Image 1 (cartoon, rainbow, N blue to C red):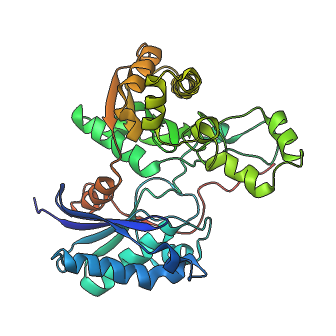
Image 2: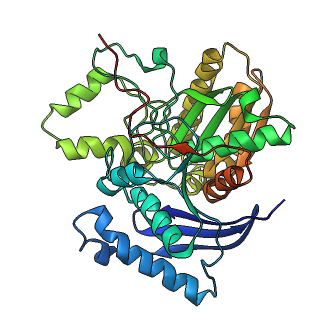
Image 3: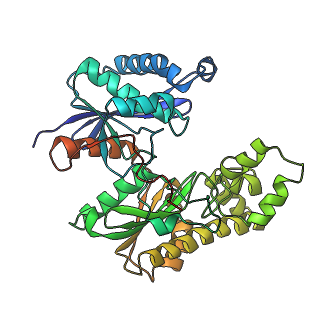
Length: 367
């Protein structure tokens, strides 16, 4: 089998992760930093395109790397309408939505634009793999107790899907053959029910749902939140930041670094232990609810993300969840590997690339 050459691109707020793969082997990687002050000069995220592209090419040249001969440029993507999971070939409609940030304004939207530009300049194909916009929820999982407020899929789609595929391969099976609960435990925490290749339910990591996380509040008693909103003590911006930036461990303990929290606990800080244990408890409780979503037919529970390196977290969760299904730890993130693997599956004929239509897979209910 040909060893395909893939260049993976994952833009973040002030940096762009890049990696070169030959087959499944990473031969080069770099987290390319961008000048934060320079980025402020650009009015729109898409205006950063030329600057980021030049910075990436400069880093590649200094490392003695070339984009000549690359078979595929594979990006994280974002800013699209909600789509089913898979690998999408970058076309005009996808580019149009990425340029304007059709659904969200985030530097990840530059991924598709960079992949497309590199492919046109150096040859090869441009792909977006399991973007943040993947939404495979069942209808019943979307409904809430308030008409007009619905649950949508905002989870670590790229890493979640890759973990599912890798776990299945270890068993000599296909991802589509299994029912899994995958817990991504990092700066954000998503606990997801995977039903035969579809992420049918999860917690919303952006809007306040599921377990608390290092910077995120998780699920809250709504009446108390309403009281806070109208207390006059906080602006709308401050309340929104409590959901995803200043909530969770940050609000309770002043840090988002789980390693610092474990040091606090070692030094006898009982409140730090209570909060850390509560976060773990909420992860386990959410995973248990996902077992109910899968009607108890669970082939495996997998812990991934950076905090899954913490043995204490794994031990406590195993204590709570091992009665449901076998526990596997696949700590860390595999986003760059996932971008390369998705492109290679298409290039090798194992998976068919999808076409982005710009039509959402779900756009509300007819009431």
